[in-house]
Image 1: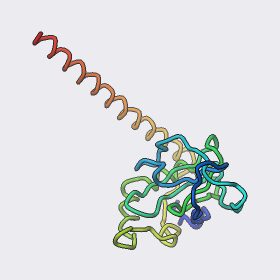
Image 2 (image 1 turned 60 degrees about the vertical axis):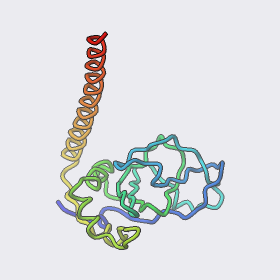
Image 3 (image 1 turned 45 degrees about the vertical axis):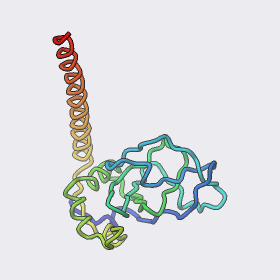
Image 4 (image 1 turned 180 degrees about the horizontal axis):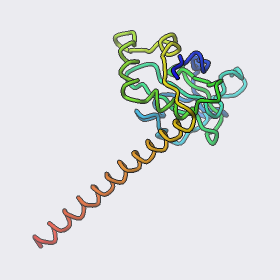
Length: 185
């Protein structure tokens, strides 16, 4: 089944705010994430709650989509994270269809084919931006939930495999370098 994002979720823009040295709420910005949407750092609250509308607070399962600049990615806001709001760099996608796993939609949005299509529709020259309309009208394939979960499991295993191969290569390189050093002593 295929659906437009607007048929399965609401989209809203992030909040414009000036971070403080200390606060009660985290102000999530693109700089907190790598290109795949993984958090790079521990989050520190840097906004006060009092001036933030309830609609801007992120909920577990919300998807952040970085629409501005060349670093476009999607990330799921997880329950274990501190209270947070998204900056204007993001669209917040809030699913209202329980037949879609937020992690699946995130995977789909981060897929290289999807990224290429979305980037081709970006506007602006100095700072390209994917518009809300483009994202709302983007059509996604939605398999049954069991298939979504299988795709996520395969992706998780593939990423683990890549990590382990890199770790093996690093250890092997150190081993070879040590053997060379031992041979010339």
